[in-house]
Length: 161
Image (cartoon, rainbow, N blue to C red; front, side):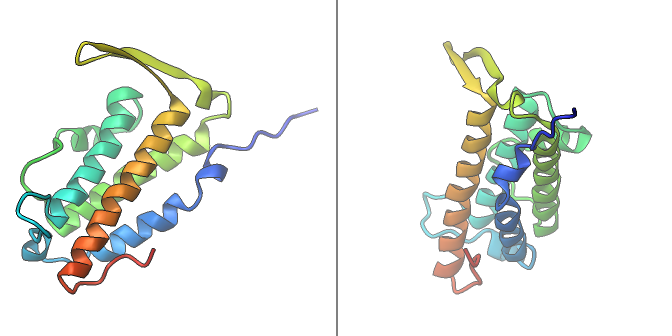
């Protein structure tokens, strides 16, 4: 008898809705709007979006070795730097989200238990695949909230979350 395995994607549904909210508010922004900040010492709206996109790619490819050439290219963006256009940010959100979704649809519950081991900044780490996924989602939520707050402070449409 064949056993049916539920993919982890079933447990992470909702991330796709959040993704669509981010795209909806980033897509219409002008270069000037992407540069808006709520304080001079904080990231701009565009820098926040860039940070979300790069972080998704960095964890997926940099730690897990997953994702195609488009994801690899996004890892070259770096965490900070010039703000890409709204179109480039939306493309980056699409590419990285699709790559995560494809992995979550392919991985099994057993795959979620895999532990990545290594060293960073002179300290060893052990991170389960499940922990990494939750960390990336909470990162999206945190910085997406900053985007929403920044948009609202400047009288622009914030995500409906």
